[in-house]
Length: 149
Image 1 (spheres, one colour):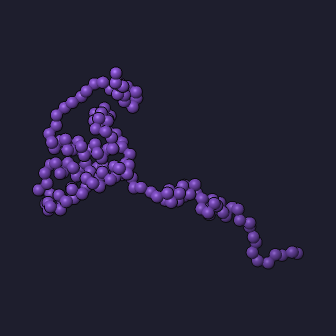
Image 2: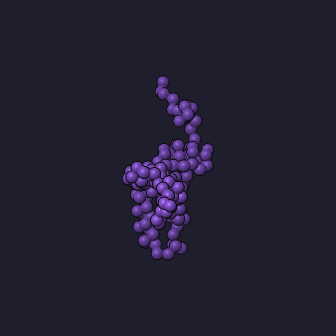
Image 3: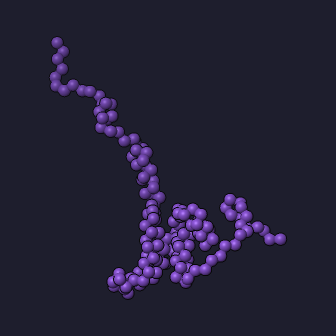
């Protein structure tokens, strides 16, 4: 007997769901699935059950966005006026801009270390002091001649 297919929570997936789509709708679904980094099954299930969900951008997803943007940019160059765009292209642009806009810029390890140092309030191993704290710890000196009479 074959092994049962389980979801992430260990539940058995034994129910088949199927539906028909137009080629344009299928292209939009494929675009969103590719950009999400999930399997088509997981993407559809999460979309239906959770409404909106967060996808963490991976290097593979960023590459997929770049690959999808190329043909769209070529099409935009071909089309000079916004009125000439068909609905499918407008929807692709909206989807790509939503995904690309949600990416957090990648930071290098050096930038992360600098941010950590700044958050700790330290530079060169010495804690920063405000001017009022520094003034409290300075020795008081009297200026001028000292009268010893």
